[in-house]
Amino acid sequence: MSDDGTLVVSSLMHSREVAAYLKVSESTLSRWRSAGTGPPFLRLGGIARYRLDAVDRWLDELEHDHAPES
Image (cartoon, rainbow, N blue to C red; front, top):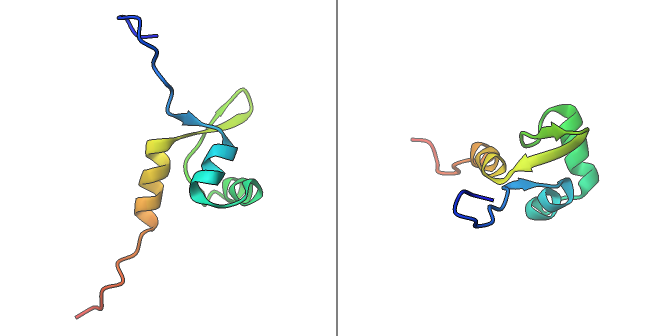
């Protein structure tokens, strides 16, 4: 809770939520995590958690511009 008593929702997501967000299986996300190729994550109590903004930045970095080179 914040100082004014409002509930603050965490931006941390479970693996299953991120897998659904990315439209991949949880096993694919786990494989990416093991290979170090997936979105950045935190380990809290042995459980992987993801920040939505970090996942979105990771996606932005993967995006390719398909415009023809001149």
